[in-house]
Length: 288
Image (cartoon, rainbow, N blue to C red; front, top):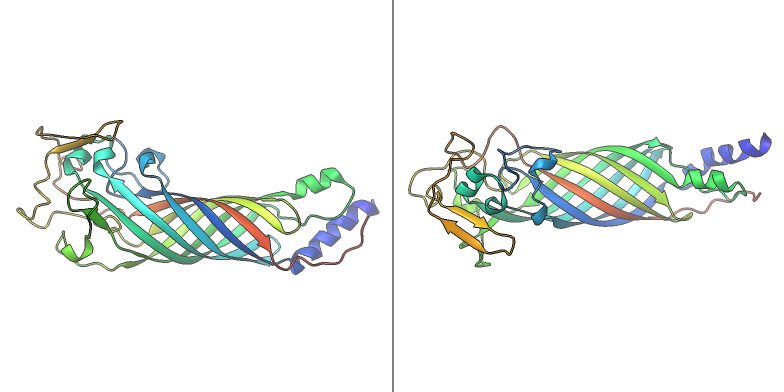
């Protein structure tokens, strides 16, 4: 009985000496907004139906992680991502009719709190191999927020690789900021490789305070501005060839002549594989 209690007592104290880690991660992002998407009108947040898998783009992140309590940590983070969407890739005939596309570089800074519902434990130096195996895996839910910079652009002509900033054009007759905030909600897990290194997987959705990540929010500014005349359908086949037809399609959303849906702000989803390195893992314990 004493031998079973000793590991538990040591773990209860050990985390206090192993609070801080540095980390870096790489993964993918998906844009969830007005442009691109699936076969229906835009859905939002965690809806998989609206993800454009062909426009998966990279995200890179780095920061520190500090354990406030044994099962609660805070993780300040800086990230870079490129978001992109294109109506031509959507399965929605109405979106193809709208025929808008964009991309933006996104620079993000924020923090998230992680609560471990599968407890994070220290790797003790004990002979109980099954106990050591249980220690390696932990899982958490996360909640956080922060801010980001973005600058949506589009090609002057599709395929020309001449990207032009959209914000100065005021396509809907309004001016919006290049800075916005976000709230994140997610799930994650960690797997300890040894006393210093660990691997993690983090999936989190960013709910933003703006509907202009893709420059599309509400209605066209007026007829004759060059944007409300994009009624031809542009389709890209499996080989990447673009075909433009003269067949009219229903407006987007159904029955409305709009560039976007003002009812929801834009969102984006991060899936990141992370490497952790513990920078203060020295803790002297007796060996058994």
